[in-house]
Structure formats: structure tokens, C-alpha cells
Image (cartoon, rainbow, N blue to C red):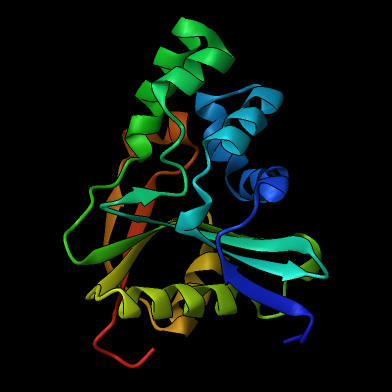
Length: 200
């Protein structure tokens, strides 16, 4: 990996917009179901992120990758509250957004760190940034005493699943929900986990 690329936990406020842009590039299609207006979506992400629950890759000061995570203490996206949604979308829009975003919520399991999305800048893909972010997150989880790391990958993102498999994640189960494909844009998601008893 290019020695100019640095991975760190969290990011300063002046990089909130860059973080929102990276996150939206990866998950905007899914989030747009709940928050169709791109300007509103970017404002919500920028204000709602909790940087402490992330690892980011920086290249000459520019954010080129981000990996969010969720624990019992918080998550990268846990600042996206009903109040924030209402400020940007109005009451009816906030109610609609919450109902849809609830479909994406995943249950927190004790002793397990939950990944909350990973995104790498298109111009930096193939540089090993995604792998490095994952290893940083796994090392953090092991240091904090978690037993495993879990994530979900949707059927329309096979490249991400291959990355997770290369790092050492294994598929646990695949959940099908074809009845929601018309709304979500995908009909299945695979749960994957990394056993931290194995060496990171």
C-alpha cells in the first residue's frame, strides 16, 4: 500500500462532508429509499455521523475510505435521530424515513462488534484500502475484547463479499425477502462473521 495512506480511528469535523460523500457513494441507493432528496440526505449524514465509531483512510489529507461500526455504546450513524430527520424532512418525511430505515436495522449481539458499512473512493480502489480498513477494525475489536465481528452483505454486491471472504469472514446464513425487493432493491442479504479467536 502507498505509504502516503494513513488509517486512523475517527475524523475531525472538517472532514464530515467528505465522510458523508463517501458513505453516500456506497449506500446512497439504499438510503435514497428513505431519504430521496440527495441534498437532505447529505445534510443528515454530515450532521448525524458519530466519528468515534469509524476508521478512515487518508491520502495526503483527503479521506479516501471509511468503515463504520456499531457497538452497545454507539454507531457511526446513531446520530441520525428522529429530531434530525424532522429538521431536514419535516414531520411526515421523518416518519416515512424512520419506517423504512427500521428495515435496515440489525440486532446488536453481546460480545460482537457490528460493521456499519465500508466505502472506498473509486479512484483509490485496488490500493488495498478496503482490506486495511477491515484489518484495523478487526484489530480494534480484538483489543476491546469482542469475540467476533459481524456484517451483512446484499446479493447485489458480490465484490464486497469477495473482499470479506479474502480477509477471513465466513458466511453464516442468507436471509431472503423477495417480498421487499420492490422497495429495497435487493432480495437477499448474507450474514458474515469473523471469529476473533483466530489471529487478526
